[in-house]
Amino acid sequence: MNDQIPISTSPTPPRRIPAYYPTVQPWITYVILAIITAVFFYQQSLNPFEQNLFVLRWAKVNQAIYDGEYYRLITAMFLHADLTHLLFNGLALYLFGREVERTFGHIRFIIIYFLGGISGSIASLLWLDNISLGASGAIFAIFSAVAVYYYLHIDVLGPIARIRVRNLVVLGALNIAYGFAPNTYIDNAAHIGGLSVGFLLAWLISPKFVIGSYNRDKSYEILSYFRAPEENTLIARMIPDAVYMQDTNPLRDWVYVPFVMSAAIIAVLAVVNGGQ
Image (cartoon, rainbow, N blue to C red; front, side, top):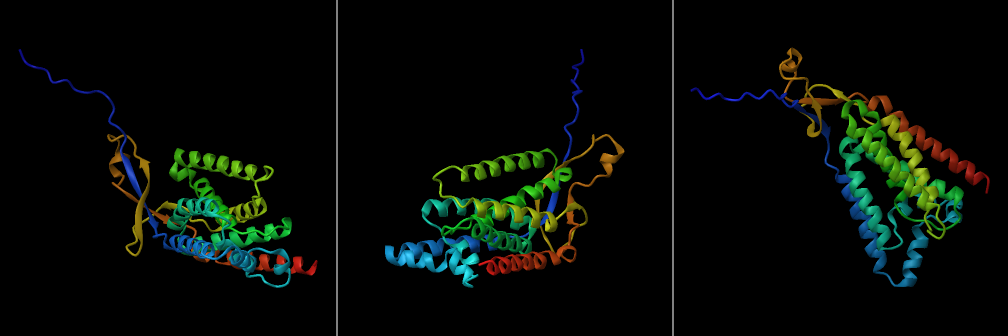
């Protein structure tokens, strides 16, 4: 009697093809984290009177900005009120900043972070009389950029992109809603300003990846997978073992954006100062 070897009739699992994306090391994110941490601990090393003077010298103080101290729109982004404030902002920057800088590149990251942060400071200037400080406006701009990136790449990234967009929208809405709660002392104007401008900037300058060709001058990283057709089809046999993604939104197509946004910021400040 011959032994029969059972033959499995279950379908072969679909092949997962890694997609390599051009990425950069997010060292600017780490530099910003180091600066805001160093500034905070320097501030804490001062006595209470000197701490107050330090904050008043660099924070968003409306009348000082109206008097021409526009640098406060930037320096306020590097100050934090207490350790909890620093930890929350630092963690958010570590999580979302690295992701944006890694996929968007250094230049796009700088544009979104600083123009988003400055816009948040201006929104706070317009709607909040209180002294304000913190990197929240810039971080909300980066947060918005992550959501835009996944939305623009739903066709490429598939269900994971839809899930990320949905989760980010819910998280952002909860944060904004919490900012309206009484006695929270949260500068929601800066959050909304940064979120809005970050969305606009990311929509215009975000990388738009499609399947392209390998470029030896770039560093690549696996960020997603494609699902190949069934192995026994002719199409499946023609598909490579890996694909390389290419950005179809090069610098020349959006180089005007930061200049237009900067001009808009200057115009808003001119109008605000003219009304004082």
